[in-house]
Amino acid sequence: MNGSASAGGTSPMSPIEATWTRFWFEPADPRPLALIRMATALLALVLLSSYSADLDTWFGPAGMIPADPAAAWRSPWGWSLFDLAGSSGSLRLLFIITAVVLMLLGVGLATPVVSLAAPIFWASLLHRGPMLAGPADDCVAVLLWCLAIAPSGAAWSLDRWFRGGPSPSPSIRSRIALGLIQVHAAAISLTSLLAQLKGDVWWDGTAAWWLAARADSRVVDLTGLFARSEYLCNLVTHGITLFEAVFAIGIWFTATQTTVARIGLVAWPLIGLLAGEPWWGVAMAIMCAGNAHAPSPDAR
Amino acid sequence: MPPPTRPPDAAHAAASGVSDRLRAAVTVALGVYLIGLVLALLGNGSSGASALVRTIKSRLYAPWLVPAWLDLGHDHHLTYGMPEDADHTLEVRATGDHKATPLRLPGRLTGERAARWRRLAAALAREGDDQAVALAAAVAAGSFDDLGSEDVMLRVLRRQLPDRRALPLPTGSSVVTSARVRRVGGELQLIKADPPGEVAPLVSPATQQPAADEATR
Image 1: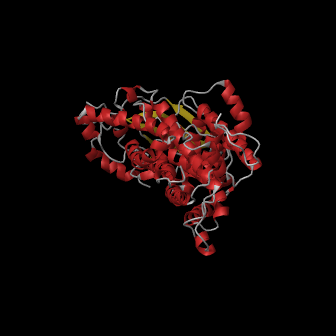
Image 2: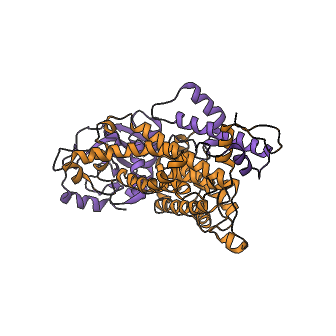
Image 3: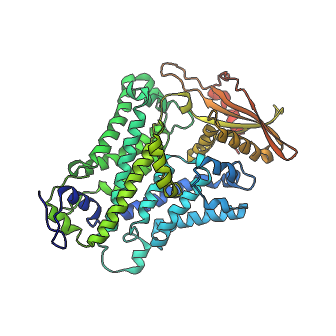
């Protein structure tokens, strides 16, 4: 057995244990995480802005989604700070606090506090109207929780600018956060693929047409192209499933993960555009950011 | 996970900044979370979940995964080409007042704001779901002030998904949910109407524009 002495020099380390230790505990550069922090906060603000104009119409005292029907819609364990808002004013105040928290996260000010507050407010907002939430909201929730456990303000932040000092050093918390984001990105890709493969349209190559045929939600109109060429429609459909399979597997291997992640930076937004969920595509691209940079020679 | 490309002692040295005890504690926490992630993926899929998975998830993981909005299936099938995958629209009008402009959402709204209205409309169209019925009543009641009436008709329209060979592409909709909602003596009543099921008259983009103009709020 290829083992080695532990720190105390008593117990051997198996290859599996070594792989686990390296993946979760090898100190990582905090800069990719800082990039993910800024991009996630920006995306969250974009998604938050989509609530702004209808906030009172949906969640106000005489709104269309009162707290009781919303509570019935979610799991009994779900709760929302926004349930406490009994007036339009308090509702708007909570909304503004959420926006401010996300802005502070984006610029990296008081990061240890706001990185914990951001997912709490975000989850609260989604719980207030679960039927309004989309896949991009889900991904942002995952990203915000991953950022909450990491020193995401260690680089490229106002915190860092005020503190000064030497360049931020690699940390184990950064590694754990990046590892969790990688796990979730692969899991989302795999479960999406498995869900798609339950439908005939993903086998007969027509799924791309049915996505493009949704006249209201589509972002780009590709019906003309797909109507002219069945092969193109088939190619796009199979391309999506093939990419998801390659991403879910390739992200785990040293030889392929950087390439797969870089392809993901482009491919996920394109899939999002075709699916009429552009912000979901952007969220998935953000999840690739941690693996998209070339590892330093001593890091892998 | 990347295969071990370096000897195990190198990995150990890389993580030597943390004590064995702390590493063990974090490993346990990660293991617990990763099991929860797998259970969430298995338990929230569209195919349903086994009683075992549901029980373990609901007793051990739901109390902390649900509040954090992490109890997610992430099974984005994008489309199955089925009618349910089409775009949904919400329409509310005062009962009997066919001349008044109905409230139609998302109307000409775009982007994520419109997507949220479409998700709400799709949620109301869920068949045989008591929560959808209660939500429909609440949504209709929420429009009383805008329509100036406490007796309204709520409909959810589903856009037709055209076949690839059907050119020019049809732009009709069908009614999937229809209900009359009114407040009588301070009490909210919902009277479900059988959706006619017929496809609405085909509307060309040119004639559709004025209707869309009216729908903006």
